[in-house]
Length: 356
Image (cartoon, rainbow, N blue to C red; front, side, top):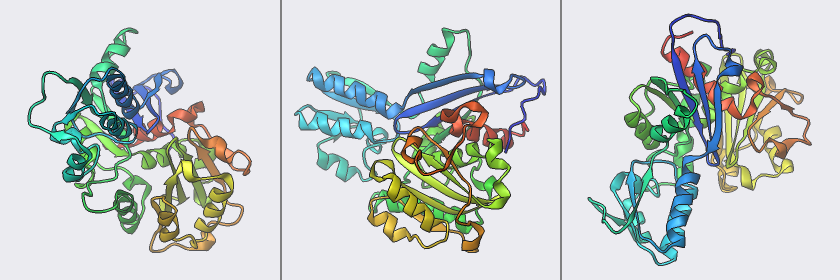
């Protein structure tokens, strides 16, 4: 999965943005430029930015009106609840309202007023996972232009108005493993129909590849030579994100298992126990889900012996210090751990658009 950065003289450019709960990690790749010299930015995530704007309105006692499209919830959903709790009105168009909950009846029961047009006396809060205007303005200060093509990663729980979104999200991983778990199937030209957040990005950005943040992290970790060199031996790729932790059992060109949990609920001891059982197939989906995680799943042809007691564990992610005492190896594709997902996005996008 190592990227070829030699000059093909076609002037291609891709902006890869890995959008998490804490940060959005931006890589602006230009064909022919050494990848270490490409423009890179670690910015607050869209949900954190929106939450800050909502809290500012709450502080000043101003009604808010949500416009834009569906995006990730998390911090901004909590800020919306706090705004309502403080006694101030929240108005929302339908698409941004779906960022709070897939069931609009639930959203209205919270106190949000879903409307067809926004009132003039409320401050408008724009909701979207990608703010191209803000990026364009920021980059213009350095005489850098946005490229034509986008590669975006979001963590989409899928449209599930009447079902646990954690449970529904894990059907994405289960379906992937049932299809064979091929590394090259971690991305697709179009996301699954039920991935509403991915489609919101896709509809906003026509020339885009959109994929899951966990999938982008797996691909990105494989861009580190220390990882790709051991790929055929049976390894664990572990991404410890600000809010979610994802582990993948990888051998050759296939993923044999996926584990996903909330980082805040993990300790080094718990995570090690989970991974030790995960690699041999004894950790169950029910155990992880009942522990308020998303779950774990294995491929149909999973063989416990493929992942031995001393199998290599490659760790990325901003919360990787959680496992610093466990003897796992911290990896950093192209010397930049925070852009692991962005490198994975770039690898996928180049394959999709035939730039390799």
